[in-house]
Image 1 (cartoon, rainbow, N blue to C red):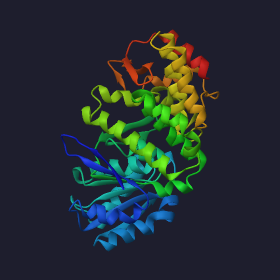
Image 2 (image 1 turned 45 degrees about the horizontal axis):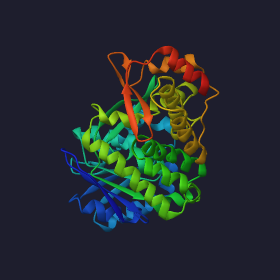
Image 3 (image 1 turned 60 degrees about the vertical axis):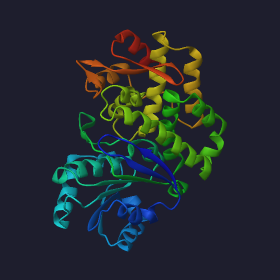
Image 4 (image 1 turned 90 degrees about the vertical axis):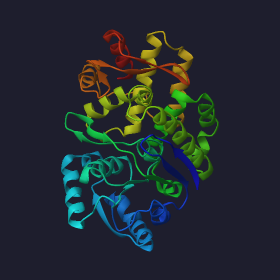
Length: 360
């Protein structure tokens, strides 16, 4: 398996990328010198497909592991769902050396990570992401959270995993829409940090959409390297890490305003990246060609650029609860060119409205 190392002052971890990773969970967790009991958290769909394989792998290494599942989708990322997992952990008598393993997409990773961060004030957390979105984004960097009815990811923590296992073979069964939602974050990494990577995505988009294993492993590796490089410099989002939020201010507002589920996270972020690129152009930060480059790669991956169900007023209302606000101002991540961004916290409302009007 290909490895990407994340080096942090609080302790680094390895991302393992390649096929058949789920069957190696027990071996890789055992290498961390963890033993005893383990709780595997999944959703009903992923648990049915891969739960037994994960439990058998752990049993082969001497772990007494059990599986807990939640309903698929964003509705499970709640304090109520976390409470049920706390109850499971307590009844299993997990101790501070017992790993909690997230087997699933971003919802499962965020929820299980939040539980791992807070149960007994923190137990070992293992990420086994099974969606492309989770493999290239949410499983790397240590941001865990649950949602509140008034906003997404408002209740959470920074809690790094001890290990990430990105099994590329599970992507063979991934629906095209879910593949595309992960590709939104892949495109984001290229747009904010790596013009050469954007060229690779343009040149190989057909092979990527066809789920060819070589290109998939490469885009996961490149994305993880880019995100790891940012996280290593700014683990807790003091400044630089904010660039990873490109497209997310508008994207989160789109998700919340129409109700979680109409758009996938990646689709909403794609719309948000289009909006952020337009704001950048209206402020004179970037050229029309840069906006066109952003739109081109998003179209290649079958992602939307518009949210016709939303209105500028609705989206503006959600900005007031954005986590990235400082002193009442939003830290907008904007483009100067492909690979070069700027963080701007003074964007005139008329400019924001103009961009929102163009994407709604």
